[in-house]
Image (cartoon, rainbow over all chains, first blue to last red; front, side):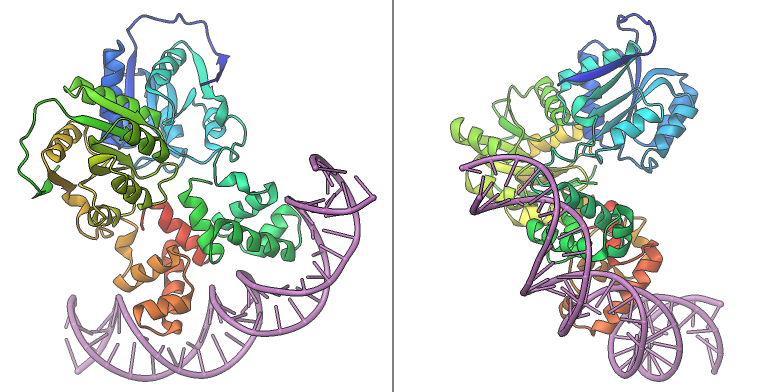
Length: 219
Length: 219
DNA sequence: TACTCCCCTAGTCTTTCGCATAGGTGCTTT
DNA sequence: AAAGCACCTATGCGAAAGACTAGGGGAGTA
């Protein structure tokens, strides 16, 4: 997987003295990932299953080198959990771990101070590499999540740019008129796109279309 | 984690000759899970990252003992992918692997012939146990997913039974009239519930309410 | 050039949604 | 007994959504 890195400091790509905290409510992911990292030589891996637990452990067990924070977890509420974790000084660096988060999350996370974004679609080996990369003071983001990548979604590929924008409005529960204002268009035009969307997505109405989009992981 | 098992046959809890195929588009889950299973003594673990790939591998590499099928994966389309996998005879038993699927998926999966439902919230060790349990011809379902567990959701608790039913209709993109027919009520009554729902969920309209429900993992 | 596709706008029409007000039942709590 | 809640129904009305037809402009391709 191609990556982009920004140099942040001049730390050495260290040996095995990294202290890592994994916070994920999916025990399956948490445990197997920890086992994999340990097998790859990382001895000091700690676990948490909620944001609060991660904060507590960070408080008790001192600062970690790296915190891997699941995007979908009790208490996270989008990226507000990231801010909390950073402010609390749980770890020197915090990275977001995500299954199928909305496309813009990666950038937002970096902007809010995260040092990495790790989609769960990456391979385990890539992840180990990324972890070491980040521990060396770099910022890791897979290029596929750098730009506004709605495109890579198979469902989104059959939609035009405008249609995707309108669909985004639908998913936020906006009325046609509101979407029109936001896009500087006439309301009739939005109606047109909504109709086309419903046809393409095989939806019976706007609500159905929004649900289908949500189900597919868009927005 | 408490479980419920139904005896299906009288196979021995076997040694290590199990052939397992894992199909998950999350490389992280796939790889680490495979590594964990191998570490637990399962030597013959194969991998696929799409439904189609799983079907192809099943075709080429003969029937497996167990297929672990991710619920959210390209080609799955809900549980239709399960049916395909079963019909194709990819494995003697097929189990659904799911992150945070709607509550009724577990039962539906079992009804459609799956021999297990594995939420990703379970621990890795529980999963290994479950895998062996299923390989012995049993059906594995965590009790937390047996009943119609919408109740445990914090969001659903503030909703009455009717409201939840109506919300379910909304999430399927149904019109008020359709929901009314389904519940044997008048359309006006549905409107009433929709209005109450929007207030309780702090939604601006039906679409928004449906999205909030979906976001919360309901339905 | 002609063809196709995406995009935007316009007008008309029917249906649906959303809000308000008002009244009824039944069950439970106080 | 009274109060409260969940539930169902009824009328009415304005706003929004959805379906249809009918354009025009621009970009790209055969």
